[in-house]
Amino acid sequence: MSRPLVTAYAASLARVGSWVIVLGLVFRTSGDAGAMNLGLLALARASVGLLGYASLGILPVLVRLLARAGKDEAAAGRVYTTSAALVGTATAVCSVLLIAYVSIARNVPSMPLSAPTASAVFVAVGIATLVRSASDVFGSVLLASGRIVADNLCQIAAEISFVLATVLLVPLLHNPPVAAGFGFLTSAAVLMAARGGLASRTRRMHLAAFDRQFVWPILLLCGAVLAGQMADWLYAPLNQLLIGWRLGKETVAAYAVAIQIDSGLLLLVGGLAAVLLPTAAIAYHEGRVEELRRRFILGWSASLMLLMAASIFIFLLAAPLLQAWFNDPMQDARAILPWVLIHTTIGGTAGVGRAVLLAIGRVKAYTISALIGGAANGAMAYVLLTFTNLGLRGVVLATIVTVTIRCGLWMPWYTLRCLRQPIPSPI
Image (cartoon, rainbow, N blue to C red):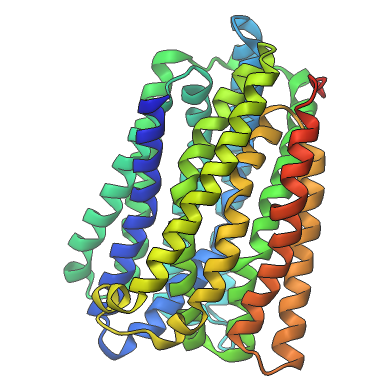
């Protein structure tokens, strides 16, 4: 487990580190428009990020189904080919919808995409998001076959290419946010090529292996996972849209900085969840449930301790870190940072529980809890923004309340309850 964990953490750090570098570069090279360009990138990631669901949540589903198929090459081939066809179709449809939406929105003066820069950023980030999510089909093959290290290295290479491409494009395009958008698109192409090339050495797709009998079961599982993933949009992305609507784009920039720190801390425990997903699926289908239960307890405890230690470190060094990052003290972001660190610590412990629940097929319960929690967060944030003077603090307070109930209390109890005995497979 050491090499998969080390490379998983390296991939997590590379993922957040690439955006840290790119956002800092955009802010520094934008002059007086730094805050506006930072807000534009945050808005693009929050809204166009929905296109990431074009992958249909296939990664945990396909990892589990391939682990269940085991050495049955015929069944594994049918599942793989059918899943790839479904994701490819969804990606093509979403690409057309994205371009159509941007084409229409840019001709409406009241829309935020009316400016050419905004349109270019939204298209580049949108297409990149689609390509990255579609590569999960190949990533699933690598994970289910135990090639976790190889998949992590692919992700690291993609993040490095993101930074290098942006650095090269900023002086060429003279438009920092557009350069960042096309840099992100470059990284998506690198990730797709690397994952696809390695996956083809393990398993090849054949049109004859497409099986219509697998379509409906796969779509049912993907639909449940997808709904749970979309619930994530009801937290930080929705908060950013509400803040932009009620408080303005410059305030979005302050929240975006704090949430970027939040994302970085969550990636500290993301490595545990990333490794636990495929290993949990394999262990479960081999009947090693008690071992899986011990791994969950250990992973949850490690997540909590890591997040607490990292949050204290960030809180103490926030001022010099933000000054070095943006060449600006970012007082508005620092004002809400302690609140953000609280919900980060509590909510981050849910990563290992999510990995286990998806690996063993408890998708429905996870999805319902995620949707209820996300809806409650959005509703509470709207109420606090509209009817109180808390401002940004009100938005973060809403998140603290919802993640405490769902991630801090319900999820560990339910996961341990499920792992007391083997759980029957849903299909």
